[in-house]
Length: 477
Image (cartoon, rainbow, N blue to C red):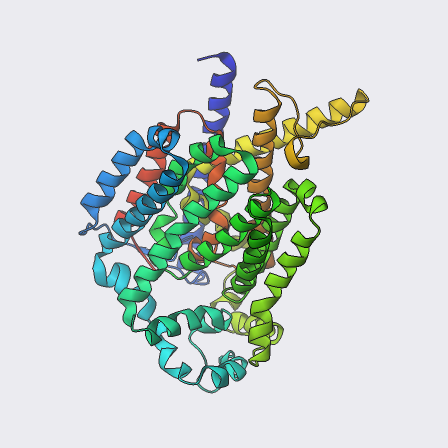
């Protein structure tokens, strides 16, 4: 190993160590606050979970799948044909999520998750007249309102609940079907991120990221909440936009991206922050955007469809959000201390993305700093930055301009996702439970692992974290 590689690996380990310290502080300080003030409203801070070592029917499959992915994942990701890789990633991700969920058994791990008193399936029967329910939706958000909605129904725009109403209407009734919908659809987020990374930063980096997207610790919660489904819709919105700005699917990609972004905003209020990731994609493909002004027109037209449908049906998104803020502070959100959760939520992010991602984000920052330094150096020398294919910036580096430019583009995409997550954090509307709420953002941090050397060691760390979390804790989601 060269001196530079040893130096980079040492810094990676420092980043991972800092992440461990952050989680340790969140656990210790959180337990003290909860036991003395009882204001965190979680049993095992910073997670909504309780201590309960256990095993289940999913344990052998989860362990075997983790071992196989660590051992063979990087090599297969490098060799498989691209379309086969996407299918394999989706299938393996689905199996990983399902096996982790089944550690808690079918009832608790899958079928019962969306049937509790806070969840969407509790109100399916109240949507027998969908237009009337949409018109009256905001009248049941506040706690003092008659027949107030359960927490998750009140906390999301009605497209979230309508998804499960539609499943019920076509005969896929009950928690089992709802749970499997979230698992199977949620797992496609892995493929969507790969499509976007390949389009924007090249196939090599996408292939390196694939095993980390499959074996993400986030899978512990991807199988237990509707946020996995939200993550997939948001991810495909970004993926289609990436295809549009790279010229592969300009019209269909832009229109489809807009449609899915509009749907994303009506699945979860907080996912409007995906506009930041979309803006990064447009910046990376600015050459194509200049060449094809109809791209933005189609994107905006598509994005207007879902809001227009719900508005015409009588649902006022802005009024609902205003009432939700009030409802949020009426409940646990009004009690949980912002000063703790502002940084402890980031510890939750470490637990859902893993130590490999902490190291990958360190490399992401280093890549952006190097790119800035190179541009500044070229500017001081009076040179113009060289533009690559379709207007993308390419700066020369030790591996040549193409590799350096691809790294910078991936780093910018990951940085945009991190920025969106930090804005959500600072808003104060995500105090606790972010191991579930931030799943849509988390899947866009995982590609940072493509920058890492020694992928098998980092993959083993990711798998070990997921298995420990799922076997030692009884998660609330």
